[in-house]
Amino acid sequence: MKIAFIYIAEPYQCYHTASVASALAAIPGCDVTEYYSFPETIDHLARIRRALNVPPLPLLPFPRSWKANILKRARRLDQERLVILRENVEELNQYDVVVATEYTAGVLKDMGLNGPKLVLLMHGAGDRYVNDEHLVREFDLTLVPGTKVETYFQDKGLLQNGASRIVGYPKFDVFEAVRRENAVSFSNERPFALYNPHYQRVLTSAPACMDTIIKGFKAQNDYNLVVAPHIKMFHKGFGIRERLLQRQQSPEVLVDTGSNAMLDMTYTSQAALYIGDVSSQVYEFLAIPRPCIFLNPHKLPWRDDPYFLHWTLGDVVDDPADIMPAVARAEERHAFYRPMQEKLFRETFGEPLLGASQRAADAIVSFMNNV
Image 1 (tube, rainbow, N blue to C red):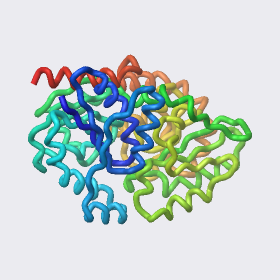
Image 2 (image 1 turned 30 degrees about the vertical axis):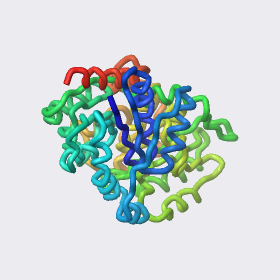
Image 3 (image 1 turned 90 degrees about the vertical axis):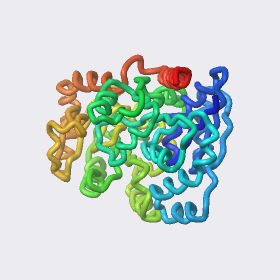
Image 4 (image 1 turned 30 degrees about the horizontal axis):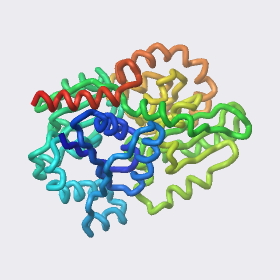
C-alpha cells in the first residue's frame, strides 16, 4: 500500500502527523512518502524522528510553478496552498492513500484526485468554527481526537460521505519524545504566564490587549511572561509585525515569533497560567489542569455558543483594564474551573493520552483492508 503524507502549510503540521507516518511505515506492506511545501519542514521532521528514535522517511518537495512562488513571496499563503495542490494532483494520484491534516486538502477531489483514498488526520480541539470545515465531507476517512469532535462533525452532517475513528492526539506522543530538549527559564526564576493570541482578525485579542499585557507583567512581581502568538499572525506585513513585537522583549518578557517552542508544546506544558482567546493550544495546556484567562475585547456573545466552549474553563475578560486583576486572582479562581477542565479535556482527547500515533496508523490500515 502506497501512502502519501502531505504537509501543505507551515511546519506546525509536522507535530500532528509525522509520528503517524512513522508508525505506518513500520507496518509491513506500508510504503510511506512525505511531501512538503515549506523548506523548514525538513528540519522539523528530522528533529521529530531523532526524538522518536525512528528512521527518516522518503521526503519530496512539491514541485512549484512560478505562480506558486510569486504567491509565497507575497505571503498569500492560502492561495499558494491551492495552487500547489492543483499542480500536484497527478503526482498524488499514484498513491493508494493521501493523508493530510488540513481541511483544505478536501479540494483535491474536485481537482481530479480519483485514485487514492483521502484521509483527514484532524488537528485542533474543535471548539472554533472554521470556514472550510465543510470540506470534511470530501474525506473518505476522518481521524478525530475524541468524542467531542466526532459528535460535532456528525451533528453538522460532515461525515456523511465517509467514516470516522477516534484515535486521540498524536502531538502528545511527539511532545513526550521532544520535551527534554527545551526548558523555559528566566533569571529571576519566577513561573511564567503564556499569552497565546490567535491570528484571525475578528477573533484575536492582540491589537486590543498585547500592550496592556506586556506593560502589566513588567509592572508586577509574580510571573514572567512568554508572548507566543499563533504562527499565522506573521503571514503578512513583510516581517514588520515580528520586529515591532520583538522590541518589547525584556528580562521578564520573552517574545517568540517563530521558534520550535511555539510548535511543540514547550510553552503550553511549562506555563503556570494561560492567557488567550480562541487558540486550541489551550487544550494542550490543560493536559495538566492550570489557571486560564480568556480575552474578549470584541465583546462577542459567547455564552452557550459551542465554538467558545473552552471559555467556560477560566475567567473571561472583556475590558483590557481588567486583565491584570484577573491575573492576580487566577490561582484562587482555579479551584472553581478545574473539574470542568478535566471533563472537557477527556472529551476532547480521550484516553489514554499517549499512543494516538499507533492508533491512527492502525485505523488507516484497517480502513484500507475493508474497502
